[in-house]
Image (tube, rainbow, N blue to C red; front, side, top):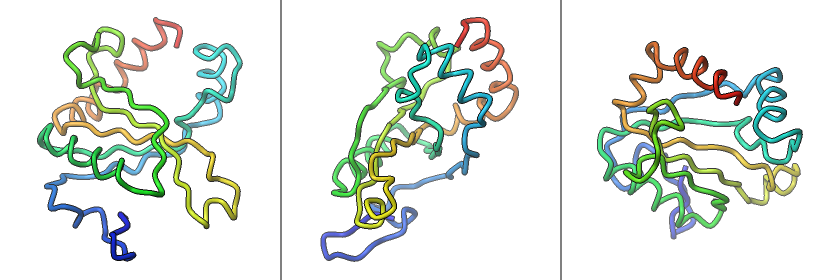
Length: 153
């Protein structure tokens, strides 16, 4: 949901009339993959593991990705920590096996998240074009895992 200036909320499917094609409800990163990534990529620094909770939102057009990012950035409760723009033409897609998205690490800070102590928890939201999502969900993810393992990540 997005909070409106009037204080109410609107469901994400109604926000700003963006034509959205879907959201992928991802599972929490497994313990074995979390440990593997912490050791391989972050050399044991568990504080750098920020994609345990993650979601993907699919779009047909780059303009809709941009609009969604702008909406997220204007929400008082959303604290953007980092953005990885793998849609940028300057991004070396060889580092991701050709995969491209806009990856946002963020925190949600509300009275509720503060009350339960998760206001500093960083999550990952991937904004991606449907064409890349289709590749990711077909045979692409299996190939990416093999690619990632060859790189030792």
